[in-house]
Image (cartoon, helix red, strand yellow):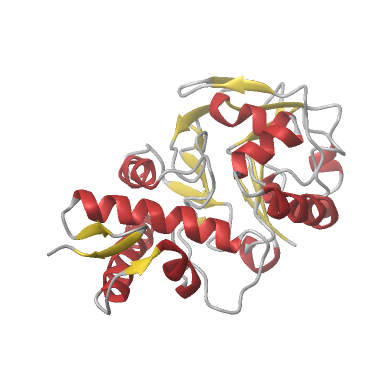
Length: 298
């Protein structure tokens, strides 16, 4: 486990710089308050530095960001209001995922086993612009950047110019928007908004870790955003072979390689492909045909 220090900010890098299913842990120490941003799998190995936090701020709610919530019962938990129900209970998280009942049943077993899932009914809400004064001039502010989830937010340590941008994670996989609370259009807007954060250093939840130069950040962000356009083109390529149903397109995959058989993959593919199709229809590039079919616009 590698630790990077930036004044009052400590970043613990998870395995492979936080590659999923792990993540990167940020801890911010003020004069009066110690705060953790999320709690990924690496949180299990940190020890006293994490155990002593007063507050956990969740940038958003997914299983891989909630690993240590059960062991941090003494710490308050806050999350953006749009993700609050997902942090408070399993029924709330199930609605957040939006998967069919058999998939949810499988997912609940997986997240209990691999992510020590523990809901926090005591969690409370923050909103866009909420600020936390940790003492000694250390300040944190929330910036709502939805799309990955409805409540996905960046947490910016304004006093240090450090932005934790969560699952705008700049990975080669690209943006993920496969759950019921995800939204492709919002994600596209958030990709423009994250560039405008007043920061000199960026921390991602996964894989990229810490980026310390704006030129490198902007280059990685541009590549990340391009994945959406590449998915548009792939769908158009599928449809160039002739009309296809949503089921047929899901079977061909847009996000995940064929052979990846995680419980939620088909559900995530279905929702993501449908959002892409909706955008392509608006752009007059695709049209609905027949009973549930799609084709290139004539």
